[in-house]
Image (tube, rainbow, N blue to C red; front, side):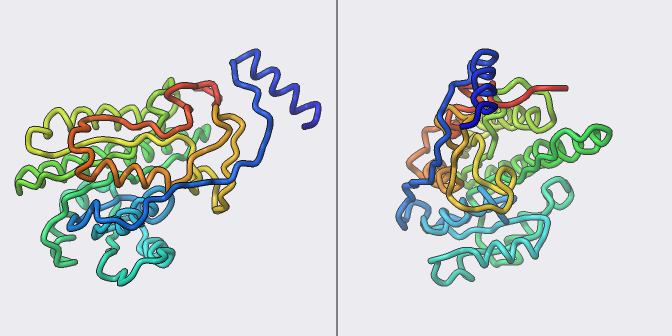
Length: 294
């Protein structure tokens, strides 16, 4: 490490209490779920399923026996995502693609009957509310970004969840709703993304409070920094080093996907309105790994 790097680390430790972790390269050593039948006979819809965490959850669900519909704003990106599925036999009967903008409430309100009819499916009994964006702080265009983030991450998540909860209740389906929140929901909120994820955390608890009596299980996963396009761009190697985190690494999408399988399976029927943090401590334990500003 050069002198400048040592000075910066010493300052961060004195000023913020950031632990001084020697820079080391950490590659993923991921324990993946073996093919199983935890979700056999289940049909899941995953919003924002064309990349990152959403795509990995779809892959894990299929390996657990489920039929999966992934949605996104771009059909070409959905097609590209489907081409990246590996070691899945007879994929055309296990994975369906549906173009959906989660921030378009008219589309959301009509999506369930449209999907069931288009793919001739008997029901959907799992919803993974994963669609989300983060455009950061962009100075004079901040209001436009603020609206776009809130419309997708919170407004869209709310109406997708309510649409499916009402559908489950009406058709007496003891289904699952799994919201993808963020460990940012434990951080001081100084931007639209963090505010939206605080809302998703509250929404998860509210849905669970109202719909649990109908056999509908609602929970959330709150990832921290994860090796997705939002964090790592298109560099998809398994190098996970991050000296800003307490553990010296970020998460891999497969780790999030494994937990998603568990949370929507019958293993977790008694886990109600919970938020499972998968952040390596960022957000829920340690908040000084990012810069806060208005």
